[in-house]
Image (cartoon, rainbow, N blue to C red; front, side, top):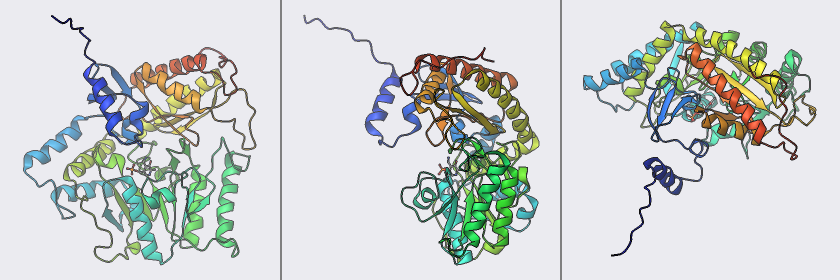
Length: 462
Ligand code: PMP
């Protein structure tokens, strides 16, 4: 009788991960740094197939305003399913869509909502960005676009062309106020004012080589770009500059919307009213939904000018309406502002204890920790060189401690926190405890860029 060796079976989740890496494209993103097979989730917590539990501060890249599987979202989805309503209706009118639009308009800046049009787009943020560009081109008869360094607007061709990672583009790039790495070397209000003047000058100098554009697109807080909040004064300047020159201002609130920054929409902080607002992520209550809302004067489209099959997701509209209503009724935007300020204060103490933290910043529950080379001096922008390897080590150390975070920024050296707006004070503390511990562990094990010894601690971590 042949002897058979019993090899212990690999856990099921390992097989799933292995098959994913064999079958899915080389462009896989989050799946590379987060080798998790989620099987259950509630609120802030995700449970993997291996039984491990994680605090999820990625929140579907900022989608889950109410966390995973919030009861009001589940109830809204169930009630559509139980009603027998059709799930696919192209762009036909339905009671579910009507209720969603009413709820959305109730939250938008009054001046926009009073005379607004809405276009339901293909289901992703990038589809809505494309629609916005097409809209302003049709309305103005002009072609060019203005966008900002470090921006992220999506992965379809025009959205990518307006993003910081563009390779070939005719989009005019403008400086975004980035305090820590100010292109003018001054930072603060002065840096933001110089950035505004640069923009103004490009538009007014007839020999600048920049013809009057069809529109300008900006994020009120650059998310993927490294959690960089634009100063309110600068946003008002952009509004004045564009309004005075009849250039439609497109504000991309795909990531900042629905309370995330401490106001229902991030534009509410500065009080500016955009001509076009681009919305996705949280407005679908965790399901795919994307729209643009714009001043009705811009509605120069012909019937069918912007079509698409998947623009009528009834479950997403119901989940989205429930999310918008819940955030509004429970003041979760204010809560995000208050809790975010407290978390930022704790991150500031953490930065004082670690010389590898160059900057901490954010608005509401959109927070970032920029990791830098502690040995290097500041460059002409005022910032020290980014430390992407250390940032990756921090992200991995967070995962080891049951905390999911992702990286952003020019060099993927900004650790980003995007927790649900529903987290408790205790959960916020648990997130920051794990992050502080992960940074301490990562700096002990990661040599500096020049092979220097690990970072020194300047005090006790908070
Ligand atoms: N705009 C902004 C500001 C975003 O953060 C994103 C996604 N991170 C997009 C647009 C694109 O959205 P999507 O990935 O759904 O296409």
